Length: 290
Image (cartoon, rainbow, N blue to C red; front, side, top):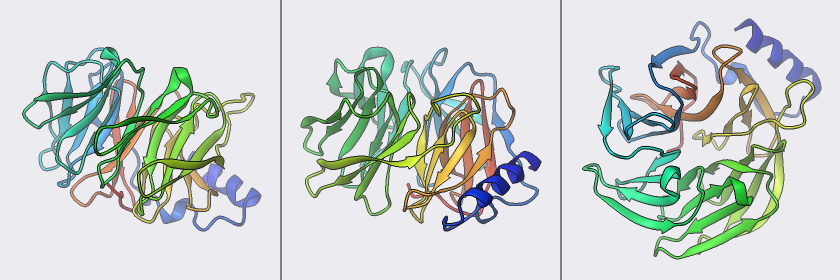
């Protein structure tokens, strides 16, 4: 907590225009707590309406795992789906996944039935709108893609974002944001009525580790009031809807590599992160959008 407050004081001294501070998010006396462990490289956090948390173990896992909100127990939920990096439950109740190992985008029923939506892509992370449009990042090709609700594939943007990685959407579903793993910006596009993207600007600037030129932006999620949470080398960076940095929630340990973030829990007010071989969570004052 001392490290968190130190970062907060630095932010306040350099940016007085932000609309909130870390005090508006963090609950005093509620630190990061280990929620699940014993994995190799956790990723792909997402949740269902009940607040159960789902995730993958990209390097050594068998499929999709579930952290039960009622019991706190973690079990393998769907088997025979190794190598998933991005994951979300769509409006139709199916999982949508970046099956990175197989270079494809798939939809999966809760019983494990798989529909292949797209092949031949080195997908990293995805988000699905409530209207059914799916957006995903392809880091090696510097591309952001769209699969429309009627299953048409469009390269929505290419060549501008430096190693696009984490991806999320605003509560009004009019703004798509993508973090740079190879730069220092979080980009934003306007989502048009047909799902296509227009604009595309480096809308937010992530704080950098001392002596480095990249922030290692990774996973992203959205809070109910439209603020964006982005994992970076320094921790979880929070941006308001105007693109201003509100604060940085430090990592559970200095050596933690945080790659995914999501709100879950019964009231969707527990912030979870995937950090290497473990999942950590902490109760916060705000709730997730999805």
